[in-house]
Structure formats: C-alpha cells, structure tokens
Amino acid sequence: MLLLLVSAWRTQKSHTAVLVLTTASAILFFGQGLIGALFATRQYPVELIGLHSATATATWAILTILAIQVGLSNPNPAPHAYQHTSWRDRARDFLVLTKPIIVVLLLVTTFGGMIVGAQAWPSLSVIFWTLLGGAMAAGGSGAINQYIDRDLDTLMRRTAKRPLAARRLTPAEGLAFGVGLCLLSFYLLAAFTNLLAALLSVMGMFYYVWVYSILLKRSTVQNIVIGGGAGAIPPLVGWAAATGSLTLPAVLLFLIIFFWTPPHFWALALIRAKEYENGGIPMMPVVRGERETRKQILIYSVELVVLTLFGPLLGIGSGIYFFSAVALGAILLYMAWKLWQAYSPKLAYRTYRYTSMYLALIFLAMVVDALVG
Image (cartoon, rainbow, N blue to C red; front, side, top):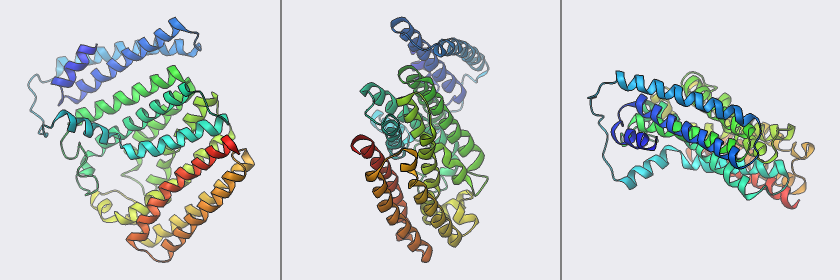
C-alpha cells in the first residue's frame, strides 16, 4: 500500500480521481491497522469494533473504484502546466495549503475547550493527540477549501499567490493532500481520544467544506454568519476529548465563536470589498454596502460581549475570566463604535486584527481561571 501511494504521488499528479482515491485508500488501510493494533494491545470501547469493520469495507470499496478508474483513465493525459519547484518549496506550499495562521487560532480554542471542560490539565497524551488531530482536521479542510476556491483565488490579489491559484501545485495534489489529512485526523482522534471528539471533528470538516465553501460562500450574503458554525466546533472537540461528553457550558463556547465570526471577517471584507466584488463573492460590503456592514459589525459585537458575560452563570470562569471579558469587550465595543461612526481602512484593519487577539485572549482568560481561579 505504501508503494502504491508513493507511486501515485510520483506519477499521477494530474489525475485527480486516481491520486485522491489512492491517498484515501492508504489512509483507510492505516486507520484499520491502527484500530486493530489498539485492540490487540489494550481494552477499547466496543464502538471501535464497528469502526474497524466499516473501515475495512470502505478500504476495499475505494480500491475497487480505484481499479475501475485506472482502467478508464487516459494513459497519456495532457501534462498539467504547473511550476516545478524544489522539495523545500513544495513542502512550504503544502504548509500554506493548510492555512497555518487559522489553524493556530483554532487550536487555541480547542485547547481552551479541553481545559475549561476538564477544569484541570488533561493528560499530556490527550493534549498532544487532540491538538495534532485538530491541526490535521483544520489543515485538511483548509486545503480542500483552496481546491474548491482555486478559480476565485486567481481573481483576488490577497489569494492569487496561493499554491493552487499560482499553479505551483496541481489541483489533484491539493485535494488529495486535504482528503488525506482529514481522514488521518479522524483516526488519530478516534484511537487516542474518543469517538465523540472524532465525530465532532468530522462535523466541523463537513460544515466548512460542504456547507460553507460549496453551498454558502458564493450564494448568500449570510455566508459568514451561517458558515461561522464551522469555526465554532473546535472547542467542542477539545471539550469532548477531555471529558468524553458535552454539556451546556460547551455550547456557550460554540456560541462565542459563532457570534465572533461576523465582526472579524466583515472588518476584513470592508478592506477587500473590491476584490470580493471582482470574484463574485456576495460578502456583506458588496451586497449591502459599507454603512450597513459597519452597523452589523457593531450589532454582532454587542451580542458577542453580552454573551461572554454569561460564562460564570454556566460555570465557566469566575473573577479572572469575568473581569477579562469586561475589559476585552469594552475595547471591542469602542472599536466597533468608532468604525460605525466613521469608516477608514486603517480602523477596519485594526478592528480585524483586534478581533483575532480578542478571541485568543478570551479563551486564555478561561484557561487561567479554570486552572488558578
């Protein structure tokens, strides 16, 4: 199976179906072996028995489809016009596919979910495998998103240099890499944390790739609002990994990120409105205009700050968290108010940057309060 995978990545860079199916079958084969090895060495939940059997069935099904696809494929396809680069440059491009800055922010919320849920440090093993699996899930989803948006990315200055848009990697490589990471993340989370965390991760990947990237992004001005649920799932994954269950306070973490998403991305959209218009993406500034967007940023910021103050009522934090939420929220409301009063690209960018720090600091305050509060 390893030889098949290596051969496909060396010779099938322009065959999307062949490369994706080969990569998927290799990861499924690995996942089946991993689950089987864990059963042989330790006691594991009964639901993983079903996962082991389902993986075996899926592996053989995909291998059958792969064999048919290879038989139907053109043995001499037209070469894909992409840039040949060094292995270091290729490695960097694959890293860029994962959207690493976004991955880091998502891992902060995942880690926060673990600590707040357990109200203590989970084991180092749980922390390691949850963050590794979470990074792979987020990175794989980001890669698939870039595969879906590769046509749009060429139209926007901010994204035109991405690996697929700039043709440094082939579409087949981008999609296969993303699918492989997503599958691998599921098996690592299922094997080393629990099945609930793994399934929540799958929900997040499906939400981002299918609901947001395919259904919403190009079709509705509410793309960011509805699609924000994808980015709100990581703390649920962390909570489930640390506790094995979900409770009402975990939902508050989800809602905080859900309401944080519109002001964060709309602040950026104000600056990039012309690029979104050129790409045909119905972002709020393009469809409703600049003033309405600034108004909505203020409204969602107020709702977000009020929501964060409910934490202590649900058992999330006490003094440290509450006063941090008040202070951080006051700054956010001030910036949103100023932006609503008068627009400037500089202020919009400062609001965008601050909202990133705001989310990280809110979750940091939760973590500190859970450990020492």
